[in-house]
Image (cartoon, rainbow, N blue to C red; front, side, top):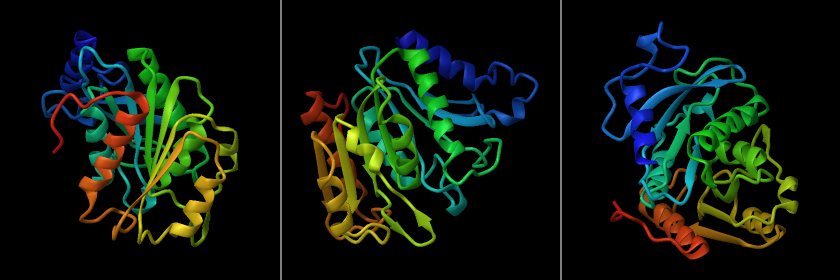
Length: 252
C-alpha cells in the first residue's frame, strides 16, 4: 500500500495527472513530502484534491469535507486540517477536496445539491485507490452535505460531524435521513456554536439510532476558535474507543 500511496503523491508532485498534462500550471507541484495535490474528475468538472499519505498498514481511509464555499470554506480551513490530522495520525490515508467552484475546482456552487455528488466522486476515488473502509468527517456545510452522500454507503463505516449546522438563517438543514443510519456516529460542536444550539443538537442526536456520541467543547464557537486541540481529542478518543485503534503518531 505504501508504494501505491507514494506513486499517487509522486504523480501529483510532478503534475503527471491523467487528462491534465496539458495544464501543469493548474496542479501544485511544490507540495510537502507525503502530500499529493491533484484533480478528481467530478460531475461538474475538475475537483481540486489533496491526499495526505497513510501508513502501509492502514486499516481505514478518511474523507474530510470543508465548510460552505460561499463563505470562504476550502480544504485549507483550520478545522478541516486539524480533523484530517487527527485521522491521519491513525495511519489513514486522508483525502480532502474542494467542492465545485471552490479553490481550483471547476463548476458553480449548487446550494448543496450537486455537492453531494462531489462527495460521492471523492468516495469512489478513495475506494478505487485503497479498497479500505472509509471514515467520513465533515465540518459545517461539509458535514451536512457529506452525511447525505455517505450515511447509507456500505463503504463508509463511521461518520463524524463537526459543527453540525441546525439553525442557520436563510438555510435549512434537516437530517431525517439519519433516522435509518445505524453506523457509528460522532457529533462534535462548540458549546457556543452560533449555528446550532446545544438544545437543538442534543434533540437531533437523541432522535438517532445507536451507536452515537455527542461531544460539546466547552466555550468553543462554531469554528472551535482556541479549542481546536480539544476537537481533535474528541475525534481521536472516539476512533480509539469505537474501532479499537490507537494513533500511530503523537498528537500535535
